[in-house]
Length: 302
Ligand code: NAD
Ligand code: MG
Image (cartoon, rainbow, N blue to C red; front, side, top):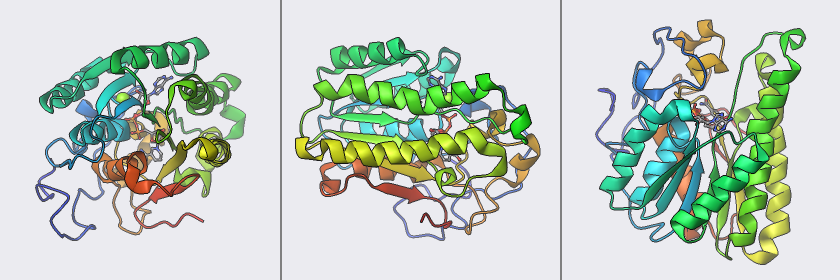
């Protein structure tokens, strides 16, 4: 919990002062990066998120659940009463362990799966594992993502372009495809787009393109599944303080100023994004599908 923050997200307070503002220290990490090595420490709602039974008894798979937005969503889902299967990469075990402990403390079931979502067979195995552990599937939150900043198209390798699309777009497609035959009416899929889908940065050519693809995929699948009573939505965050950024998602010299360009003048914290996933997962959003929910700190989505 940063010292500038009130102990919860429920007391009225000035959002411009709620969390740390730039400048931040330079802090390069190798991808995928660990939340535990970030300074200041991100807030994933560990000490603050308060559930109120909005997902009681739901069965959820969350990808990228070890850190950042995925961790905040996993904690929030569990505190709202859901059992959770967490997916992430093997190198992230240290971050993941902390989340497992927090979910166990809630008395919810938690199981972990490591593997590359850029591989179709791994995606099928994750869904099979989730079904076995949870006894069904009501919520699929596709939050895993890859972002590598490169100044010029001349230096974007085919390998990087391919891996970014495999992780962000193909992984989502394969997970949805494997999950849907098992999802009942009332189930929800939540994908993770970005403000980059609409206002792409010059140095995020491949990443921004994947996020635009995710937005279109979400809208098309929502139309396809509406008659079955399954809803599909996306969350589109602006700059959020997560390991994705100092591990190559931004040029290292941009990290000290990260979030300055948002009207609030600071990056968002994962804990500020999680409530959007909870809303879209819960029955409260029963008439919302094909929607993109922006959490951008004031840079408007179109
Ligand atoms: P993060 O690094 O904490 O989370 C990304 C996670 O993706 C990692 O923890 C890792 O477990 C997972 N991942 C990466 N490659 C993978 C692979 N090949 N197979 C399986 N898992 C893999 O960062 P985050 O910012 O919380 O990212 C979560 C999502 O939010 C991503 O989709 C990202 O594009 C999106 N997003 C982030 C921001 C931001 O500013 N941080 C803004 C908009 C959108
Ligand atoms: Mg991580």
